[in-house]
Length: 205
Image 1 (cartoon, rainbow, N blue to C red):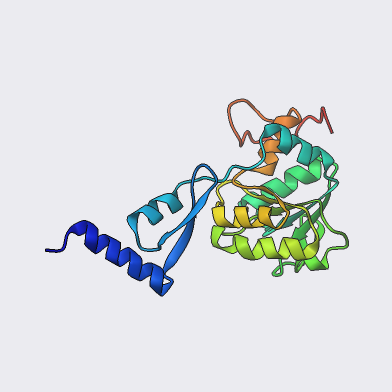
Image 2 (tube, rainbow, N blue to C red):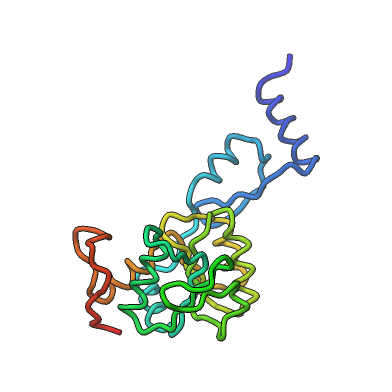
């Protein structure tokens, strides 16, 4: 009589032999290979094990930067990228670039088709793209020579974060650069993100 354990082990062995495996990362930073269809693989993949720079490190990143490119920038006022771009224009000293191949101008500035078209290599690349697009954007950031990718609040791709770091990038993910800049520079209201005020008091920069 075949037991459930034997059946599971046989299925796992068959998956490993067929190459139908997935590398998942554990909370302790180690990784292991499991059958892609196994409940454990799916559970571990759903858990967040990657942690990015802490608050002091993020402040250092922001203070060291002189130029910022926004990938996925939009001229539509209802989009988060528009709000963030407006804030950075008015409340920072960064040289700001907008990247969107579908636009020619955003917030009164030229819009560029790609990072490769920018007149300089930006210190920070801020990304407003779907989570599934982040691996491609990481490759574009690497090709451009930029050293930091900052993926906006609400966007998450853990494997892309690990990949970016393995390639030498500084990765910030699921954090809003507007909120972080305002937080560190005296312009974030204690009650929340959107106070109806775009500018911030500049106390550090």
